[in-house]
Image 1 (cartoon, rainbow, N blue to C red):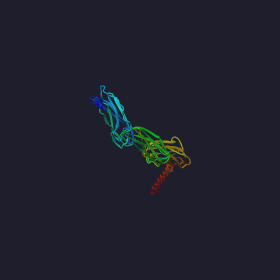
Image 2 (cartoon, one colour):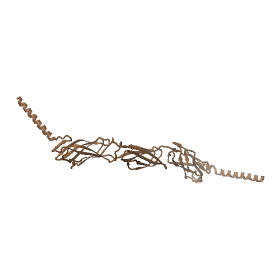
Image 3 (cartoon, one colour):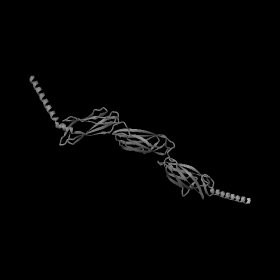
Image 4 (cartoon, rainbow, N blue to C red):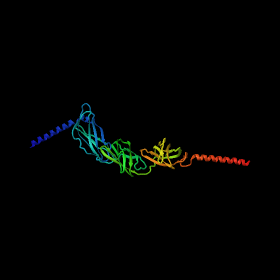
Length: 390
């Protein structure tokens, strides 16, 4: 029994010596120096900045900076050490060789389980012949959504009239977001277009998203902005009230200095159109309506576009019988192509020839004749008085 125990002890001692020799053979000064030339060449994050609850990927790239055919054996890679950034994928347990100048990427699936802040999960890579390599990855969590704002819109809307709403999407985040789509909806709403694809938006960038709305009733316009942060969907909602009324900014063309002339049964009306509104009146037109019958050369007069406080002249010609007044129509288009019109009754004289000022009803020729008769009467009276004094 003693002999067997002695032999067993000798066997254990010899085995221990062999194991120490093997370990000593791996951990050499040359292998340690070679491992020191292995470094982290890049760390990428998708998304670059996480929302709380976002899932993503952290990829660590390792480069062997050795030359002269010096390879490195690696056998274990992990990402851990921070409860706010939880690793959901398994570590790399298989051994592999990293040749001189070669690169190898290690990707880890993670979930952001913390609040706003910066976190440092640790990447570790084990070498067969040296100590491990450690790297602290810097991961940011930021709960800042992209911003949807209304830049300009009408004060009020008119039933069945198309109006343009000018909106803007801005990205205040520190990373690019992608697949941005704006959807427009609402009860009694017709939008052109219904969806606007924006695509990617870099950090600090902004882009206009304009659309036209036609409302059949007072309602609420719903704007839904969908976008992706990495592969994580996010949304922004904005409600815009749609009310009916008079737009205070709308163009307001007004006729003035209206003069009526009767030329052998054909009436000629001249005047000015002033834009008293705050927006441009496009395609301003003046024409006469029944019972007037438009005649050449100016059945309809196109004044053109009138900017705010601008004016233009017009002239229309027509015939009319046995009427005291006729309606004069003034029409224009706004920036969205909606047509607006107004009517103004203009008094005319259908008896006799000559010219008359609008609304006076007094022919000019009889007035001149009366003035001449009065002058002759006054002249004759003066002569009579002179003779009487003599």
